[in-house]
Length: 250
Image 1 (cartoon, rainbow, N blue to C red):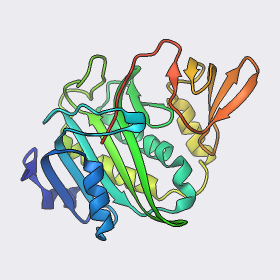
Image 2 (image 1 turned 120 degrees about the vertical axis):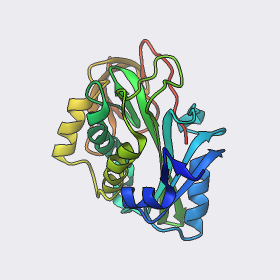
Image 3 (image 1 turned 135 degrees about the horizontal axis):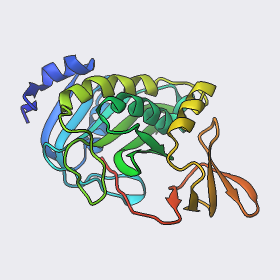
Image 4 (image 1 turned 135 degrees about the vertical axis):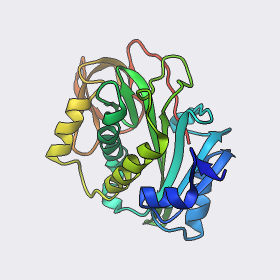
């Protein structure tokens, strides 16, 4: 693909402040291409973007349904501090939500651990895959799928009419890259921001445990009030008691 909405790869790299952009009309997965580029020494910030994916993947085998000209589906490479990896998806979500608010009909909400929602409907998803060499973190590929115009499945959220994909990338990519450099646990300010955007707070849920969602900890665990008391979960998907399936993949 020569350009995204008329913007060629070289100009898109300048707009996003990254060393290189690889544009494709169709791919099996932007994540797979990013991993291959990283293994060959591609620098941090290298961005892989495709109009269409035929085998995009997400957490727990889910699939992102991306339609040409309707979505933004991309992966970029980073080599972040390993001590922030446990909360990386949450930090990415926080920065993405703030960046996307300007194009959203309502404040962007966060669903633990890696989804963005608007008025309860899924707008975007995040996928983080790390590659290690022994105990050394080699690189991280960060995937992001965003519904810009058409909703790719019933009940999906989109951005407001008139949102331009190049302008979205101009704001979103630097915000995500900044989030990737965060160190350690979530700060008090980050926890406060998360609370203000927490889609599931005080919601009855059935996964990853049956109870009521009560926010998150500084280490990224979901806090659940159960019949036996409060528990924390660091893995799994949050499923409300009345669940509507949603999908995400890169």
